[in-house]
Image (cartoon, rainbow, N blue to C red; front, side, top):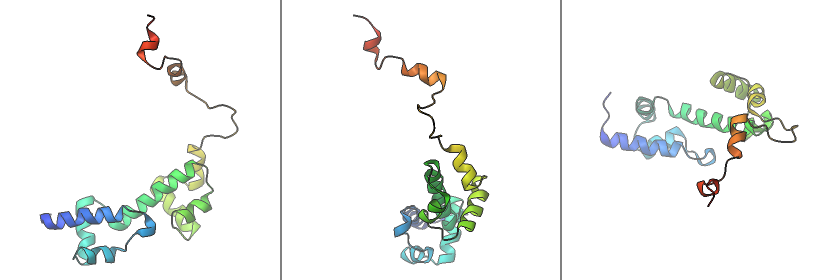
Length: 141
């Protein structure tokens, strides 16, 4: 599908608007009107250029943010509300469908256990920590 250069520039601008914070996010209709496109034409053109609809782009961003919050150990309910979902069931089902694991299982798999007194470091990285900080420290003068 060929897209006119002016339309392509408008779609790039729309992508920038959609990638902003969710609190300031405009609706798809508002963005389309701002770019002088019909909402349906905007969605079709956007999907042709970026491979996903504006809604899918926002959903992916929200779920990436949720993954980051879950990795810090935040409770699933708090994460659900923080990223803008109003239903824990719909958040959990969507998260499981997109990520491949439930929010709780994902959090358990990526969270570093807190009950260890020291950080667990794989052997190769532990050896790297023993090396001098710069090459001058390594050479006697």
